[in-house]
Length: 442
Image (tube, rainbow, N blue to C red):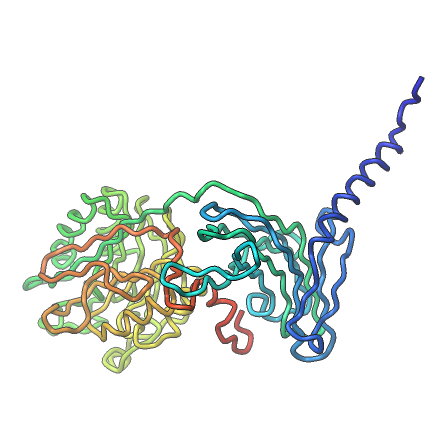
């Protein structure tokens, strides 16, 4: 008769099986460095994970410029989708997005890079920064489609350029997943100049019919031009301060009702009063009738600060039901830092209410940040100056207004990854890992 296995014996069996499984997994990961003289220290710490899991650890001493990674090859099939995920914890790393990387290459059976249909190589993907979890751990994950002909995915967990630093990688997983669903969003902009307005309220009522037009076409985001409570009021001798109003206030209350009626978001640009200060602002009102948030124009032209308008100080990004929205206003477009700060904070769509401006700069802001840009202007389209339109991450105009009193609407997929930019590949994925970091900027 066989003796029953004791609880202690079961624990030993489970521990042995677990160690064998982890040992097999550990052998798949190999240390690598671009040059031996800058190679950091690699080690496996058996119980360093948040729940006692093994951690693939890289340690840099006090020498400058050390660079190395754990690497592993996974099997894939071209056309299918795969999710990479892992936990990461850093110690002594000043800029985690710059100094720690998860990099992925898709390759053929012989380990060679594949070529895209345009003949250029499929370069690597860089997994975006993740969400913080407990005790300093961050979860990184992303879904990628293996290109046609792919048989291997080379995954790299990397630490570079950080002295006296340590990074722990835990639970690196590579799993086949269903294709992600499209995230379709209908973006709209109004191209209109109020006709002989007598008051800010008159402007609001004139814009309302175009908001209704966009709302009836199921627009998710509607952008109005800059300073709608000021347009035309200068003809009546009014200054910025004369028309300035609080947020919440008349304009946001008026358009919040329309946002509720049409279940949409509206960017409402006004001259704002906050106590003794006056700002050139834009409020985002939502389908629940509330003000989601307010952006105050950071870059002011002389025409505004000479009238006592105050500059904003922050670059907020707002969560909506379809994704993250940033706002910049007119003169902001002339300075790349504004759009970059919004993109860095997660903006997928940037609304640009604008009086007028250089359209090439709008194209640049969309392209260099790989975002959708929605511009609404008072400029006549015949002037070959700023347009009212929807711009794609390629910097191209997807749709534009050519006549006054029109609404432009374009449906876009925020889940679409744009990788066809010559040999640069997934530029949006590269931005946080390759952009300059200055001072305490993270």
